[in-house]
Amino acid sequence: MGLKKVLAERKTPIVKKWFDKVVETYPTDTARFLKRQKDPFGNPVGSTTFEALTRIFEELLKEAPDSEALQTAADPIIRIRAVQTMFSPAQAAGFPYFLKTIIREELESQLSDVQLLEALLAFDLEIDKLSLVTFNIYTKCRETVYQLKTNLERERLYKAFSRAGLVHEIPEDGPDLEEK
Image (cartoon, rainbow, N blue to C red; front, side, top):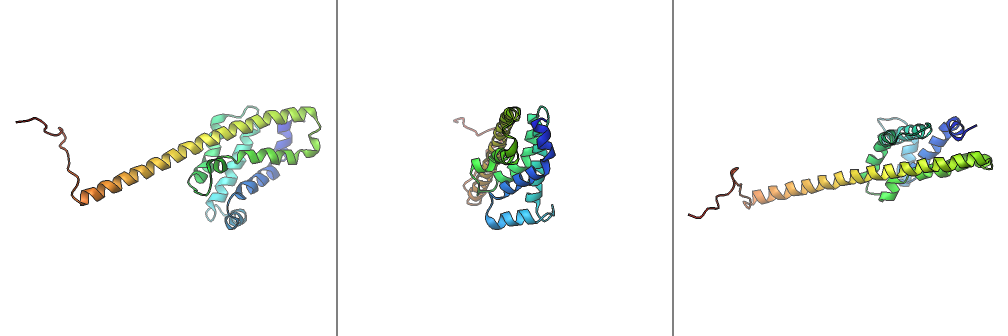
């Protein structure tokens, strides 16, 4: 039996363990809440994370995982983690690597099979590609956050200078610089 078929049969426990590992990156009280609260309205972060991990895993199990589909599936998790200041870039985008350990634990008794081991090494490359995708998403999200902060600060300063009478509007046709 092929690796992806074996993993598909164990999808539910693998995704559950992956979710638990991702949630453990949060502070203890938050992690406890994210694991316990199942209502998507009461726990949108936990719900979104679990759904996204499921979609990512399902895409990885396809014969040829599509990088755009992986990006679409990973996007919600990264968007959440990119605005949470408790995470470094590696922590925010590094959750795919948890999957490698979980799969090895799940398949521990079967890793003596050379074909399965070779397939696992190929699957590891797919996880590595996913990690690059997640880091790209993270970078774009952080750029957006910094741009928004810059725009907000610029607008705040403009309003302060304007109230202080330090801003003079330039006419649409430009300043009159001709000497008379």
